[in-house]
Length: 338
Ligand SMILES: [Zn+2]
Ligand SMILES: [Zn+2]
Image 1 (spheres, rainbow, N blue to C red):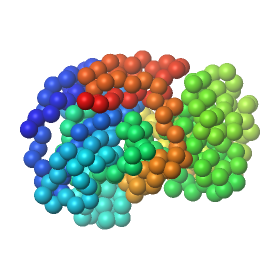
Image 2 (cartoon, rainbow, N blue to C red):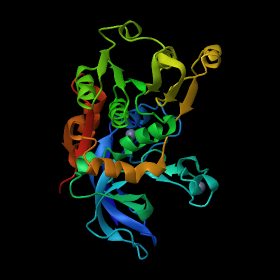
Image 3 (cartoon, helix red, strand yellow):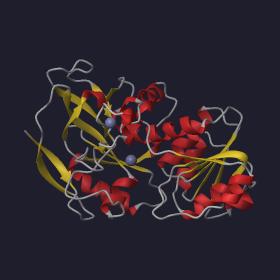
Image 4 (cartoon, rainbow, N blue to C red):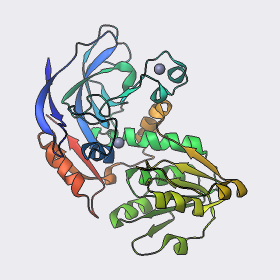
């Protein structure tokens, strides 16, 4: 069997072609992709900023879809089930996999990052990577489970306590989801620093008490330095990582989440004397079912995040739209309703 697929050939525009689909193994399912989130990581791959990516393959690691065929041993899901997909695959046997950290498995592969991903019309995937959706959660919103899951994993690591002060540096989709999660977890103050008006408005709607547009105000004069128990760095630039250190209170914690392209210099003496903890967070395969539960319980409203929608046949235009960026755009989603 073949599937239509948008394949990245190394250019900034993907190409609609067809790819062979592997046979279903015992515990695999065939999923028709219904919604795809376009992520900044996809754009970075296409811009050749990511070392692991070798074209040609279909990108896409954020998706939701419908189960259409089952391998002989599949028991957890059925035909017609609506689902979101965890793109990460481990060996299932090593200590990383067995402790819920398959992203650190030596054999880890990820759909859309280092193997063909969800820009295909159909994908073959293990039932272990499938999380069922209740009727109340749309495919479009569910395409964002992957984004939310990395944020929730970061929240688990930083262990925000009710009443603490938190600031998020960065107004990308992850920065906005972090703001929502900090609010849900009872922070007494949630501040979001960013540069795009529409995103900062959504940060407010997600419960941020204060937003600072760094195009209009210098962050360190707008907020109190060294006053935040938790600082979430969701940009990944040297300046913003250094800024995070200036914002964190004595004995506070910094969540390092944004991916820097280069090595970053930090003031280690300051970390020691002020007893600051820096925590890195990349992925969190253990949290997926909680993400679905958060959406089902309407604790996170994804809809206002999705500013642009394209049909599957126009995925190339969706990519161009995401590359164009701009003040009014947050998340671009590709839908296949056929
Ligand atoms: Zn992503
Ligand atoms: Zn493993």
